[in-house]
Length: 276
Length: 305
Ligand SMILES: Nc1ncnc2c1ncn2[C@@H]1O[C@H](COP(=O)(O)OP(=O)(O)O)[C@@H](O)[C@H]1O
Ligand SMILES: [Mg+2]
Image (cartoon, rainbow over the protein chains, first blue to last red):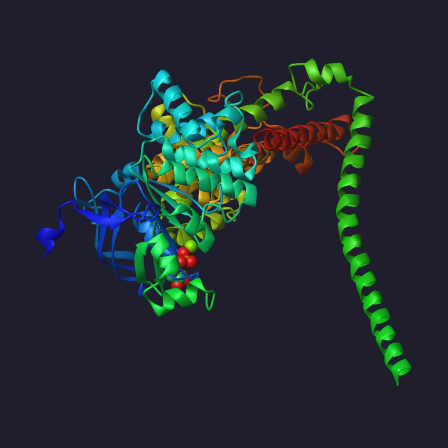
């Protein structure tokens, strides 16, 4: 069973937009994942495949474990004492279990970056914010830094707004711009997966729309995993949606199917606003 | 009925009003008394200094290189005392700032919670040790120790009390810097780790720069503590006004001189006696200067999180 599963798998899944079937590679595979804060179990037997170059949304009522699952992907829990992972999150193509204690969390974070709920730019210049991940990797070459900072800012649709003031503090930007700066920071290191934890919950509707557009456009080149408590947002940006409840994965599938024909009663209750 | 209830409410309101006003005026009196005492101190310093400066010109006071109030031909040049003060403070800060910042970095960023919760109160307890103890520690322990390294070091010198003052203010500098670093939002540390940074990189590249204002404030407050420190230098530095920047020489600081005079070598009302007020005024101005500096630093480095 395990031997069969441990190879990168290609599966045929219906594409929500066209209705036709497209081949998608599995970027990561979660296998019987349990997670504990001390004695409290926050994730229970999660099994799930994350598809490459797609946006996967995690939805569910507050406290159901969405952020906890997301933060397993960049080993953020290692910073909190008395936390424990059980099971596997395999990352392809090299098929490494990123929650294994033998795997260095820094190696994992080099490949999987994150954008947080509240914009959290460093009190540094716009340029240095974006260059940060490169600098901690030891990149010194000015031409390379300049090129990658520009590319990341373009990728975050911020370049035109800030190209003439890269030396100004990142904290002086507006909320929406700060969040795009954080996205640029997350993109600068060429990650394979970008994690978003409710990235628009602190933003106004216009800034939210621009971040959503950005996330949709990013999916061509990276794999996106996004936590949102906003179902419309999940419907707008994602190709796949996972519904979680009380630490369990209740239902997972193409977004349009889940939103139109949920298989589980609890999913349909949540989607129709009966709880959460 | 309705009328009765209304008066009842109104009486309640009036009662609360009176209470609030009383509390407010008591609190105001407390605050005002602090201001009044400070003002009184400044006024006394100014008046007594004016008496002093009617005998000694300000130019002499600021430029004369000798401070010899006990000599028949007394001279009142503040420079030797100022020099001793600056020298002792410089030695102290050379010890206190690196050690204090390292203690703060360790406690705030590296120590397990248990260690931090044990060490921090211990450090703060060290602040309660009477300074006389530190004075004799400098004279009887550190000086002989230093004499092993520097054989011709005099028994009284600035180096030894300077180092001891440094050790003495480490808990202070450390705890102010630690507060500043702990005030850096966790979200910034998370952002740094999420970029793949190590703990050391996070500390050096994110936490310390973000806490610059607080660390600078700790530094400046450390200077204020070191220049204001009295007993250690009075005991271990030799009480000899000496215009030198060589810390291995004996010297006196402004505070040590004030203690010396206050202990009764000079008659009340004499120029020599008034000189301690002039010296005190200089000390006050130095402190004021550093407070303004701390304020400016804080403004310059203030970073919005
Ligand atoms: N640091 C922590 N220590 C202990 N329990 C936690 C911690 N963080 C989250 N939890 C608990 O884990 C559960 C899942 O939380 P979380 O993943 O933040 O939910 P969501 O993001 O879906 O709102 C909740 O019951 C929460 O109380
Ligand atoms: Mg959450």
